[in-house]
Length: 318
Image (cartoon, rainbow, N blue to C red; front, side, top):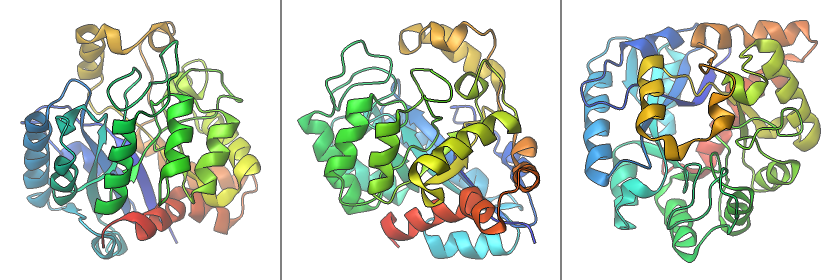
């Protein structure tokens, strides 16, 4: 029987007229949960709320997917073999420096948020910063309020110290929604063993991503993903590892974003040529691929969706 697939981060065009139909590519027998990004560091509160309202209306009108504002809804939707959709934010900039906006985002279906996107902001340092100052006092306030309103703190794109600080102070699980292992491939967006251990200690999950430049030298293959999965599982235990494509449904849009905001990236993003992503159709073959690598059925079920499902049960406001 097919297992639930839980993709903790994927990307539609960040435009208020974007089609959501491409998410139907996640359709599978066991059902799928997909978290769609609704903004990052260039976006304001108004920008992200406009995106969220558009995405929510479009998903609500789509015959193959449904909004999942709580875990009971996720279970009902996916057990019917359909696609459950929630949302995430890749930076604290859309808060507009107002903690009260976290509750507003939670009401609109945002279930994870990372404080920084690659570079320092008021909340903390990013993974591409030369100096790692960790989480600031404002960043600590954000984590505490996320814990309260049911949004899971996310360390992807953050600096190592920022991620470690989040794990130290969070009262609930901290995740790395879309990050690979630096010991397997040395990229500044990938996380250290210490970060992985700290995440696991909170009960959190590391979502190994399908982006080629993070898996290896721009190689978004199931073999490359399996190497990161196996390393992480050996390091922190199978209960703390998941998957997340970070798939861009509009390659041209992302490459335009690189051109519009070059200060948010560096040559670790561009030196390999156009970034290659693992599409949902390839990710859907991961269970068979892991069986061929002699993974157990229980372990495959855990990393495909069971572990992120457990975090949602612990942390979401249900």
